[in-house]
Length: 138
Image (cartoon, rainbow, N blue to C red):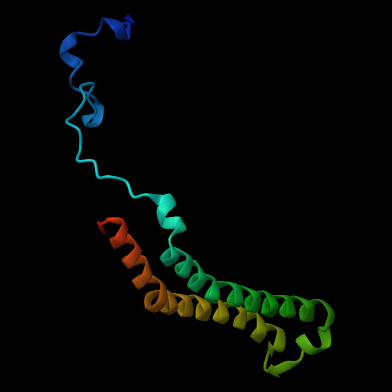
């Protein structure tokens, strides 16, 4: 018959105290090179950051409002304009189906538009702010 022996963790040999599981040890390693953290309050209060936020909002808010209006129009048409939405364009394809698919197309178009806008208008400003704060890209 097998006998189970319970060994408390505190009685382990000291030889195992340095070697840990998965490379984790109990001894402190040498301190990594610590960079000075940027002054986030100063960055937030800078006119460059305010201009960046303004540029961001100039695209995002109107585009979000436009998409919300477009989506709300689709939902209201689907709820109250059954005859219009069920009008067959060809075969089994209806106006409602086409407008529903255009929701996906418009989402992709907005995403592509935002990526292009950010690449040309936001990313250069972010890089300038990061450089002035002394933050390097890793």
